[in-house]
Every structure is written in C-alpha cells, then in structure tokens.
Image (tube, rainbow, N blue to C red):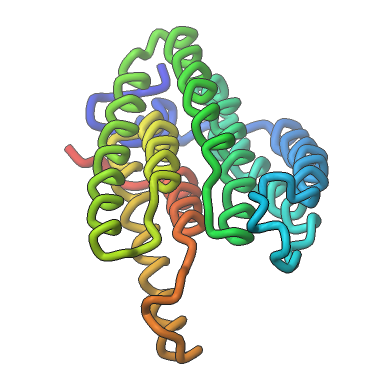
Length: 247
C-alpha cells in the first residue's frame, strides 16, 4: 500500500525499516526523455502567447521556449526516481501531470503575473481523478483522504490570504488560491506533512526573493512580484525532500 503506517509522510515502501526500493533506471531515463519531448511541445505552445489578454499583447516576449524543455525533462526524471518504486508508481502519472501544469503556470505567471483559470481549474478534476485511481488500484484510500484534506487546507488558507491581499492591495489572487488547492491535492497524497512543507518553503523562498528585490535592486516593496513560481518551487521541494512524520 502506498500510504504506509498512520501518520507517516512518505510512500509505504519508504516508511519501513527495510532499505527503500529504488526505481529502475530504465523508468528514470524514459521519464526524462519523455519529459524533454513533452517540454518541447509545451514550450512551443507557450511561445504562441495565446494565453495573453488583449491588453497584454504588447508586452515584451523574453522567455525562451527551451527553458520549459530543459526544466520538464529533469523534473520528470527526478519524480520517477523518487516515486517510480513498486509501492508508488501508480501515483506517478498524477505527479508528472502536476509537474507539467506547474511548469506551464510558472511560465505564464512570470510573463504576465497572472494564473489563468483556463489552466488551473481543469487541472483540479484531472489530478483528482488520477489520485483517486491510484487510491483505488492500491486499496489505500488514506491516500485519497490525505489528498482531499491537503487540497482543502491549502485552498482555504489561500482564500484567506487572497482576502487579506485584497485589503492590502497585494498581488495574491484567486489564481494563486486554485494553485494552492492543486499543490495541496498532490503533496497531500504523499504525506500529511508535505502540504505544510510546500507552503513553508514557498513563503521562505518568496520572502528571500522579496528582500533581495527591495534591498539589492532598490525597488519598492509594492512592486509586483508573481508568487506562483514560489508556490511551485515549494511544491517540488515537498515532493522530492523526505520529511519526518507530523504524528
């Protein structure tokens, strides 16, 4: 079973006293190569910039498509290495889907400081379906419970942050709320502590960047800084870094 003992935060095979199983090298290589291919297609699609609104059309185009290709291949390989073990491979498709969506959202947020609903909202039922299938196939319904509670926890917390940001006229919006729900769903599926780690890492990275942004580059603290990339980075850290159980 994927979930392992109650309260544990990693896949069942990693939560025992026995040496953890390792993913077969062919799976890691295949995931990396496939990620490069999907990244190339995704980068080509993003370079059409058709996600921009009419008032955003004249913005300079500074993000090269190869960034997506170079990022998605290694990320898929890393996830396959961590979760491509017998106890966890059924969850791997959801993680690879999330990585793809997350990288696309990072690109868009860096470009226009906005997370379009056309990408975030459809991803929720897709990821939920993949996680549900993994729970059904393994008989580990605790996996699904953790995922749903993780999505609810980060989603509600994100909504509160969005309301606070509206009062302070900050840039944290509803797109970030939905992204937090996606992150809670995926990280929650691998363990109770993972959503907390994802959020903590995101705010730590975002705070450090904001400090450098103000002190080194001498810009106002009110300058717009997209938070989506930091949320994505926190999620990836939570997925790849093993954390101790909360209970």
